[in-house]
Length: 218
Image 1 (cartoon, rainbow, N blue to C red):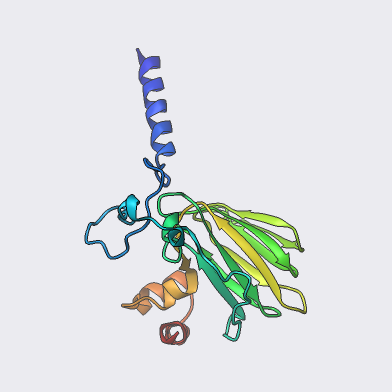
Image 2: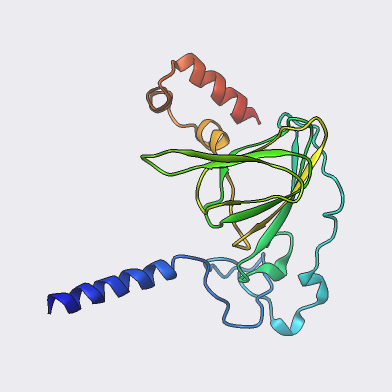
């Protein structure tokens, strides 16, 4: 009897883990209807009879992005907001351009794993494992190399070559989400109190005030 209860619990847990991802589509496609008043876990569907080729088409990834910013990078996402036909399909992608020494700062995709290919240049990239290990796993990639960032882990990219660089990413959700760590912590709308941040980062209030001013303004 105890053995049967254990197996039932194990299978229940397994099933719950399998369901903890973007659900499989139940129809051929679900073109996103962003202005719908219907609230669902994702975006509501347009009438499939109204679908057009334009709903499944995106152009412009061949164009370099403008890297004239403090990070020296430019991201061109192709998520469901840019390509409505991606809705419910469990995929998306994006191009990143890097000026020399440009950085994509530490960030998280809460709803997707990411596989990234270097199209040009040399990119140092890596991710941090979860608590309590917090181990950095990183590597410098060259043109044609591929690296994977597991879902929900903090990761980053940096151009380590003297010239411009380009990467192409594929993600396992049409709406992967992005949480940039520094912006979220120091630039939240409705700032986290200095008492929390001074203890969390073991710095003085002057440092916290400075960082909040930088990120809140940006």
